[in-house]
Length: 174
Image (cartoon, rainbow, N blue to C red):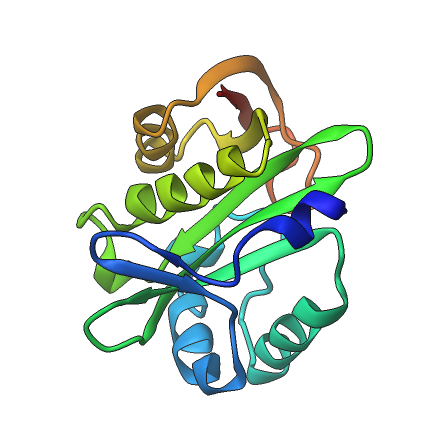
């Protein structure tokens, strides 16, 4: 988990600031996730997503050494529009995950946020990062491909919400 702690507190991209999620993000966090189009394709986001879920997520950041989430905020107003992060597990490459609130889809924010985090990860010596995406989530597949990921395995999801559905495992190498 040493690498998790080596990631910067904030990451700036052309239009975005990636920063630690804070309690003042709660309303935007709940509003953004509480949409089946956003939560449905994810492996673990609760639906409906309640304020209690958001508080737990924000507060767990300080005590969860296996995760490094960043709030994705536009530089213009610093309002949360999504989350991007890495999940760390011993003996495995970190895994990229993200979501963007639906009103902000199609504007390149997911790719920009992912590239910002991937660049920071490369700078601290993380050479391999993985990601998973449902076969039916073509928009997320495009984001991952545009950010340098390639499919390394086609399998089926074992997550209860998506059990048996086609799942792609992708990898990005420095």
